[in-house]
Image (cartoon, rainbow, N blue to C red):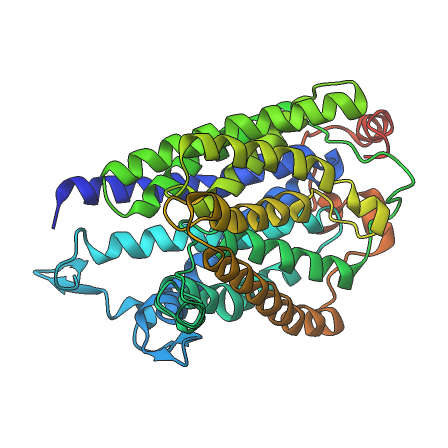
Amino acid sequence: MDSGNAAWMLMAAGMVFLMTPALAFFYGGMVRAKAVLNMMMMSTVAIVVTGLVWTLWGWSIAYAGKDLGGIFGDPVTGFLLRDSVTAKDGVFTAINPRGAAYPHTIDIAFQLAFAMIAVALISGALAERVKISTWMVFVALWVSLDYSPLAHMVWNHGLLSADGAVSNAIGAAFHDFAGGTVIHVNAAVAALVIVLIIGRRSGFREKAMRPHNVPMVMLGAFLLWFGWFGFNAGSAFAADGTAGYAWLSTAIAASAATLGWLFTEKIRSGHYTAVGAASGMVSGLVAITPCADAVSPLWAIVTGLLAGIACCLACGLKFRFGYDDSLDVVGIHGVAGLLGTLLVGVFAADTGLFAGGGFRQLLVQLVVVLMVVIFSAVMTAVIAFPLEKTMGWRVSDQEEAIGVDRADQGETAYGLSDAADAAFSMLQGGR
């Protein structure tokens, strides 16, 4: 055991946990005023339901259970963390594997925080029209049947891991340092599937649906950036030089992406917007996630710059194709996650195309990310369709019109009188 590593990983776990409340601010500011509480409640549900599911069987499926076909671990071995915690002299402590650098319980906490943010990301695509009750059930099922098995496949010597069957067949080790596929591509594909099932908000493409609180959006983005240092640097699983470099590459890529988004926005609309800056930050953070330890400072800049430009352009595709991804989960997390994962095969030291490593690294990155897309789409559909047919995803049209906060939470964010609330809604474009 190393107290320095233990201290760092416990801190990193706390920083990653902070990302979900930060996302609540980021998404909460993005929606119209009549839906801000519902949006923040969706992040709250992601935290509390995932916390229980992970403790019961999620940890076991992802990391603790006996491998079953390279796809998932059995849910029994680590059920209720019985493989990881024990009482000693009346105090609970960790059961530590031989040679562990820090207590097992810290790793469980770190991975729990990852599961929380992964499912919370999906909520942004569903903003302003989804019932909390259905979302609660979805979170429990998705973490159990999608996220935990995929974490096992990629990060626990499963089918899609660096030493798994796919990598061995291609002759190159798949690389996803901190979750470009497991977190971001996975969540974006799930978001798109649900959006296609539940349909568009009333007035989509007909009236402006602007963020109601841009300072809240900026606060959320900066807190996400802070948490991302734990997300990426913590994925070194040690207080060492790799963690330090992951911290730097994360900052470098986010900076370049913010400028890339802003310059693209300026050319297209004539303005540098605060929402654009916040979105650019997130796009760079997502893109560097799979490759934070593997690309040089130059390629970290290029990765971020490409992500900022690509995501800024991609967010407009929902209007062209008619899918209502409310807060651009697909356009930012999907596009940047896919881009960052593929750029490992181009920019990675030693194995990337630009380093003379040949095509195999790019090929394994492409094959695995496509398999993740298929798995996520199928599993999400298996969960989301029955929920649509039984519980129903959406509030009624009338409830959506008056605001999902009033309809589902029975309260409003700003404590205004009915008349003042109506006037404020008119001023904010139907909010």
